Image (cartoon, rainbow, N blue to C red; front, top):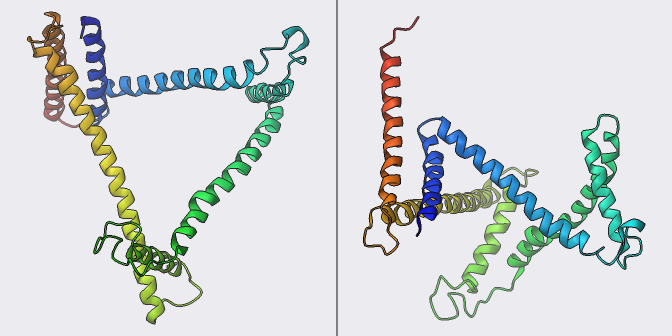
Length: 270
């Protein structure tokens, strides 16, 4: 790691710690990190959309045409139509001509909805229904290799999916009072729903914890260790200067916060 790379790594460590500082309170360092993330993300996605959207789906399609005839002599001249619709969306910023943007927006929303509904039905409805309609393998009820509850193709797993799905649907059937056997099945449906919600929440929490661990590993292995490891072949005497200077800046801010807090605490309320 050369000195320039270490400076960028230190900047990355600053942004990481500035983001974590929100756990203490909203502060200027967190605002800097927040604005950097928003700005860099916006710029990054603009470049991605330009190269992966306009360049590949418009400019390259019309490359065999000529601009002085508005690319009408291109073999794929019809790509001019979505280009015109895209430009009409910019009239949204005009108070006088803003109504024109409603036409391309309505067309875009209609097409996107027509594409999204079949996909959602296929992924969230049809496949879920298919999973509970699979024939239960009674011969391999406890798994294909004996008593194996981890075998997802076992008859036991298929039976749990079927009973759980039916019980959860019965819970949302309010035309009949949830009493007796019907109420017991509905209560079991509540348990199934809670298990599903708990699993989703647990997965989200574990994903965030994994991200937190990854950032801690970055701070230790990619920033702290190169700064103090003089046995590194690319070690530079400027590494510890930058590292400890950064730590002094953090310490100075902590002292400033403590002094400010004690001063405000000792000031009598008016």
